[in-house]
Length: 128
Image (cartoon, rainbow, N blue to C red):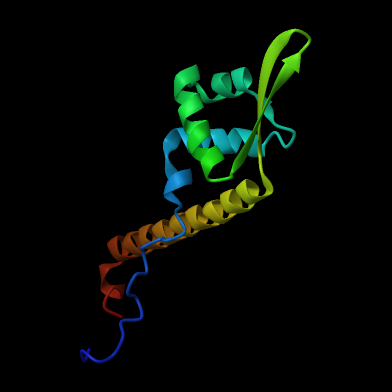
């Protein structure tokens, strides 16, 4: 291929849509829990569902809150303090976009696996 022609596959597997704010394991769990509970979850329930300590959950929620992906509401239930967390509209949109990117990764990996399997089954077709 001549040097002056652009490579059509350049960056094919860069996956720029894999948002680093969302891609961390604990935050992925938090967002998944929140998207399945549209009205939000209490801090304690979210910590339990994601198997996180209070301090760890608090730090991850700070990151998500700074990015405007979650809304944290502090109030009371009776006389007891109650912190609830819910996805914002922006958070829901960015998480869905992120999931679409993950689906693309899965499709690409499956296509590579299918191609590799076909070559192993009938190596004669690889050059065809």
